[in-house]
Amino acid sequence: MQNDGKILASRLAKVVIACIACAIWCSAQSLPIRARLQTRAALEHHLKSFSTSNDEREKLIRKWLADAGCAEPNLYEQAIGGRLPPNVICLLPGETQETIVVGAHTDKVNLGDGVVDNWTGAVLLPGLLYSLSAQPRRHTMIFIGFSAEEQGLLGSKYYVNHLTRDGRAHIDGMVNFDSLGLGPTKVWASHADKALLDDLRATARSNHLPLATENVDSIGASADSESFARDHIPRITLHSVTGETWSMLHSPSDKLAAIRMSDYYDSYKLIAQYLAYLDDALKAPTPASSEKPRR
Ligand SMILES: [Zn+2]
Image (cartoon, rainbow, N blue to C red):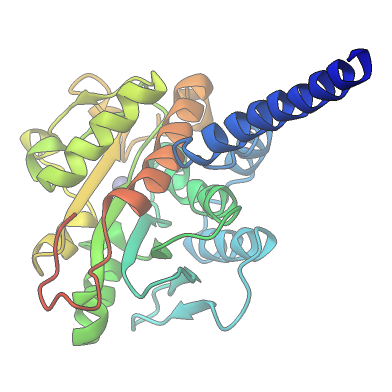
């Protein structure tokens, strides 16, 4: 009887341990998709390594995309004509052909160092590649450093104009960032796709990261996302500019000293989690479906 009791107790203990292990494993499987984060120091190092030459800026972003794991033929340049630097493009293959385009312009105007506008955005491209390549993704992600935004969105217009019909049809969304780090993250809500905007706000809430609306068209600005909007591709732009800080752009005040690193790092964390969330939220169509659902 005593032996039988010991055997029973031992079996019960094994069952309990198995159940606890199962509970831990099952809860891990239901955790929301997360993104691996680069350290603030690594991001800051790239931010401080800016160049004031547009050619060199494009080459630096290309090098850091390669350092983050992007290799030919997925890493390439797209010449846009004239003597302008090329667009730099890194394709991170996903499980489907459905695509999320992640963009930021690499060029600057003559005045200032162009750290805010838009080295802050360009530096995030390799940072986000690092974040999103840690696990398989449903969507193919295309990271693009656009050339010549300051000359009339030339690089992004060229990219959109040279998409194949198939390539255009597969883009579920375009996420653009321009001039981050002047303060907490802002979104250009009046020129954002509603579903993309709702998903961004949900991501900010669930990660306890700041996000406010600031519509930059009211202060006369535009961004590369508008090149996609012309083709009815869902788009959204994140930034940090307000009516008070707007005058710093395209001026000698656009310098590294203008960056608030903790706000900038918060923007990076928000965008990394947002893209990971979008990968799941923007559902790819099922093979049986002839229509392309938004979600
Ligand atoms: Zn800009």
